[in-house]
Image (cartoon, rainbow, N blue to C red; front, side, top):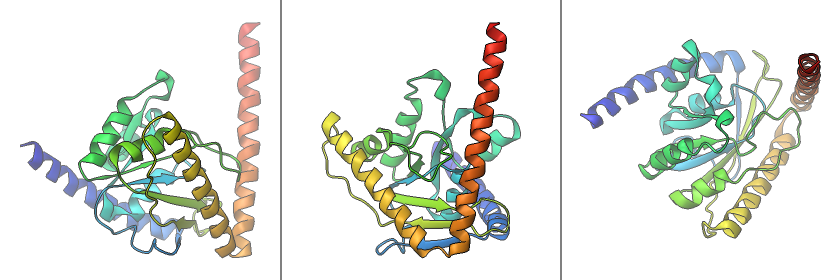
Length: 244
């Protein structure tokens, strides 16, 4: 019965991904770039851990829709699972993580279970939305997942101004096989390996992008930084008024 329900859910999710993918391609006009050895990462079979930079709240759905053949489960913030949006997130097989709960390990166990079952998972190793073009230091969860599950890691870097009809750019990297031991030193070394791989992927994409798209990406990050700083100031002002 459980296998039957899983298959029915996969059929429904596949249909949702297919329809969403058509709409996404019409609206964001994604341009896909592939590093040597990465040409088949969207359609290959077998488990894999995708790691992405996190510049936009649609990063997760975008990857799922572009790689629908791999049935990717994305680790996403728990606050995204509310109302109608929760149905959309679950239809994309997303795994909620409760960031307010501190050390929430339920998402890790669920992601590990899916990887060991032969499925694909995606995670944002930066751990938060990043308003700059400089990658934040990676958290160790992605490396630990890959090492414990024994699966390859596929880095993906996206850039653009994330507005409709503005040609979003994505660079897919070749699979990385981590060989470190899953202990503290090994996870730290593997995390650094993934960070360096993503930085190289970013450089590779920026070299391939046309100047107008690099300009649009820079403008997006400028606006994002300004919006983030304004919200922080408003939040700090509200906290001061509350304390007073």
